[in-house]
Image (cartoon, rainbow, N blue to C red; front, top):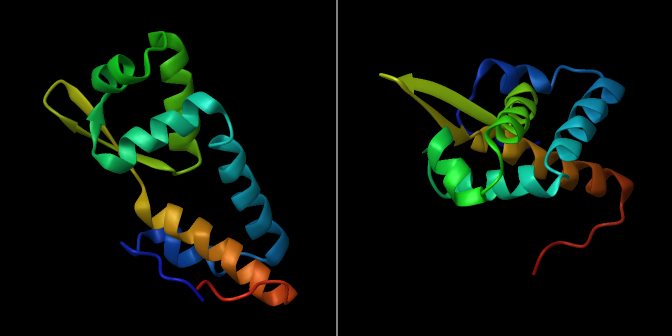
Length: 118
């Protein structure tokens, strides 16, 4: 199958979901990063963790809009957060992103339409 990286609770149990539920979960996750602003946020967070202020400065969107996008990404478990003092840090959830790539590869391989990467 595919590696989950950090081995978090959700990651380990993703494999146990029935096919349709698993597909819906991944569809929701891909949809979440389908918006241009959220994709740009993910690109920033893959490079390094950032505070909300740093993300806002880099992306240049209003605070209320950024908050909405971050909540959507957090809800789909694409980002994680932790608090340090008065700062809330956001980080890309690499385990979930790895699962997404694994899902695409597994689905493609089961359909027999994929050729191995060169």
